[in-house]
Amino acid sequence: MVRAVALTLRGHGDADGAPSHTLADVTGDVAAVLDALCIDTAVVVGHSMGSIVTERVAIDHADRVAPARAAIPPAAARARARSAR
Image (cartoon, rainbow, N blue to C red):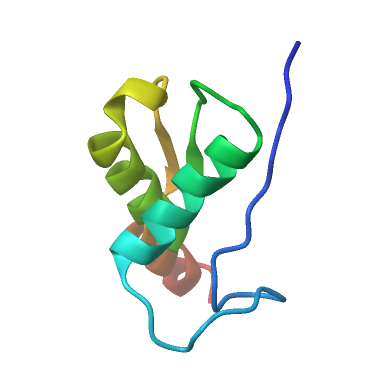
């Protein structure tokens, strides 16, 4: 069985959250969602800022993360946007 869960980081999109938060805050949010959903191990994927969070989750919670994937790191996303102009 495959289950996909998409998170919106606090302070982004429609998510609530203080305008100021740390990488540790959002990394903790990801771990808390895994806990709440009783997910022991997950493949974590991130895009742009989410790729940074993905890397940090993989470091801080290595025992809970299967191979992590950073879809488009922020610098690559900026370069792609510049070349599309």
